[in-house]
Length: 338
Image 1 (tube, helix red, strand yellow):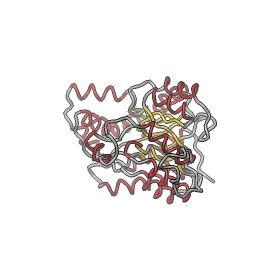
Image 2 (tube, one colour; image 1 turned 90 degrees about the horizontal axis):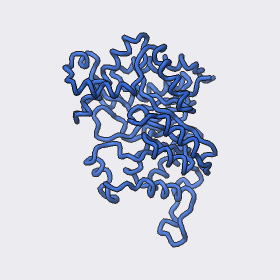
Image 3 (cartoon, one colour; image 1 turned 180 degrees about the vertical axis):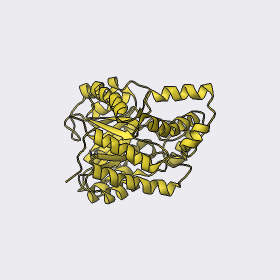
């Protein structure tokens, strides 16, 4: 039986639309996905990236949850280095209080941006160059569990609303370290195959075999994140994916711009270095008509034993993006909610 499908949305900004329209497009896509039968819709946190409007996932989660009825809505993820744990706890308790049983808290170890922007985000906190994810994660859990020692200054601090539990927690990762950490703390795990240089099989299996039950989760749940561009034909999908190719080549050269149109991508003069970069990225980008896409995804799902497939589609045209998800929903046999 096909596994559940979910969506990771970055609110793509293109040369044809504004950031505001990109955010409205996310709400439109979420409504559409909710009707198709997708189980989960996560929004990302990125900063200082002209092609991504998704910089405040907690705000978008509230808007999307209010506009949908069935899907779980969550963060893919909160970049914990950028935030005080108490702020994260309270914001996601508020969301869970407003939309009980429908919110997910995905947590990431990276800042989701470049070093200078990371410093701007954290300049009134601790050393921005330190990897203090574990300390922040532990503090988040202690706020939730009321576990600070009697002599700790946070002993009497309560994350409000105190009578609302934190949503289910997932750790996001792109390496075996993240998989081991998620297993050790007993959280869900989402592997970012769409940008990781790691073969996804080892981290996904490592997470499953090393998982330790926790108050947050009694059994493992492994989500495989993939970048998919699907269209009516292989040729149509390739044209749509040309946007991804040019955007990737530009970003690897330090050029951050809104997503280009297929026409701009096709007219671009690619250097040998560009073509080499694009070729490497294509190894983790799934492009084609339904038959070709499924021929790639099905063995990948089988080898990783994924419990769920989370798809991101960063292309120029909003309607083509919706159609890509619709074709996947049909291929995986999703049933519209009753």
